Structures are given as structure tokens and as C-alpha cells.
Image (cartoon, rainbow, N blue to C red):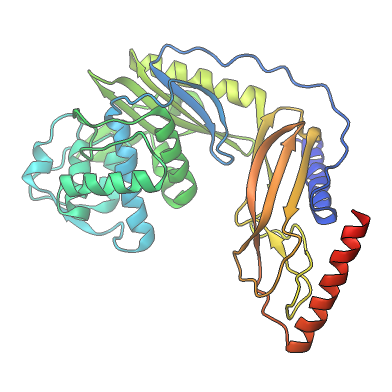
Length: 399
């Protein structure tokens, strides 16, 4: 990021912060600037696709993104996600050894070439799933984590529901064809967003170009890892029924995009079509972080508390994705409950934050209490009640 761009962004963030700390619902006056001309998104040779910003979640381009299609080995994104989740929870460790069953060994399709009776580490199995799309590795971890592939598929579906993947149903851990095994481009983008943001310590695996196990060296099938140095994931998929699919992600100048294409005709086609989407997003859009997690955006009055003020903010970072060179048009509005009464607990919702680009809302978040305010003493509550009564009268007369 160049110095001029950095200064402009810093100034814009200061402006937004000033707006939020000075007013609750009054908008700032802005002078419209010339708008960037955004062309229509590229049309791809694929059945379905989507382009999403990984931080803001904004969708920049899509086609048939909610159409239920066979995901093939894109399924393994959920398999890997569940392994990473258990690693993060501490229920398993990377050096735990897994005994390889005959079922895992016999599973057809792509393999990392584990043998029956082998003791293989979780670390190697996770790499086998992500880098070389090993069906045998996927079944092995399913058996290790859930006792079998069927109960593991049930676990996959429970987490798909939790993550908001409303058009997904898994029947296995591999992506091998099944009549009721389906997902969508949108759901795969959403899952990828959680993989990137929830478990960043494991994300580097998705960018590895090769993996060797048992003396056999295999390449990652994601061709973009060789062609574009900003691409660092995520997963390929192919079956005769599904065609060729690719979930890719790239990071440029602090902006991360996720691209999903499903149902292309070849390995080369899925790479080319994915590159078109990523190039479009980076060329015409930018993503800005407006507020850090737990940043204090306002300190409204609290009635009847042991403190007269409450620190208010958002529970999480706030990002917006917008057309390039339009950040001067951003404006923020805090809509805070005007009658806050103690007690207030940390995390209680007290209003909303809305960020506008021109007249369009580009982000809306809950405003929450960043601290607790307990009830004040008897006399404090009494005097606050009197003050609140007269404040209401004055408000009625002036209104």
C-alpha cells in the first residue's frame, strides 16, 4: 500500500470515528466525488460461481450461486474444517497417530497412498486431504473423529447448518457421488470464509504445492498456486457428474477475495475462470477496516447506574467492501437507545451501527455494551429518576 493511499484511508477512518463519537443518528454532510465506473462482472464457462470478500462477506459477482450441485472434492473443505476445529479445541493434536482401516485403504479415487495398519499422524492426514485430495485420508480422519464415515457426515451436516450453509447436504467425507450429496457456490464460499478466519494457524497448508508421503510425491492440483503469487488456497474438485470445480483465495494489499467456480470443463478452464473473477474483484473494489473489535464508538447516558456513562461499540471488527476511490462517500450513523437504564451487562444490545455509501447501507451491525453498569444506590436512582422526568418534559416541549 503506497503512502498516499495509507494517509487517505487513515483520514477516512478518523472521520468515521469522529462522526460516531459526536452524534447518534445525525448523518454527516459529504461532497459527492466522481464515481468509479464498474463494468458488469465477467461471464464464465461454468455452471455456477461466486466472488466474495473474505472480511466483509460482500458478494461482488455471482451466477446460479444457490444452485445445488455435486461438490466433488470441494467436500473436503468441510472435512478439513472439522479436523482444524478439533485441533483448535485441543481434543486432538497434530502428532496423534491414526490407525488406517481397510475401508480407508480401499476407498477409490484420489489417494495419499496410506496402507492398511499404518499409523499416520493427524498432521500428515490433514495435508493429504488438503494438498493431494486423498479420499483415503478423508475416511481415516472420519473414522478417527466420529467412529465412522456415516456419523462423521452427520457431524458435517450439523456444522453446515451452524455456519449457515442452507443448501448443503453431505453424505460422505470425500465428495464421491451420492444422490443426496450436494452444495452450492455460495455455501462453499461461506465455508472457506470460516476456514480462513477461524483457523488461520492451519491455513498455510492450503498454499503448499506438493506433498510427499511413503516415497510418493504428488502436486496440488490448484494451478493458480503456480501462476499467481497472491493465491494461497484452497481446494480443487472433480467427478464426471460434477465437472471441474475450484475454490480459490488470494490476498492483495490487505484485501482477501474468495472465488468459487463449479461445473467447468477442464482443469485449465477452472483455473482460467477463477482468475477472471479474482482479477475483476481486485481491479474494481477495495476493502477497508473501519473499526477494530471493541473500539469505543460512543458513551451514552445511563440512568440509575453506578456510572453515568456506558462505553458502546461493536463486538468484532467492521469491514466494508466498496468500489475503488469512493471511500470519501462513506458516512456512519449510530442509532442508540435514548433511554438506557441500569443494570446493563457486557454484550447487551443497545442500538445499531449503519455505514452508508451514498444512500446505500453497506454495513449494519449491532451496537453492544462494552462494559457492565450496575444499579446505583437508592439516592442515585431517585435523583436520576427526577432528572430523567424533567429531561423528558424538556424534550417534549422542544420537540
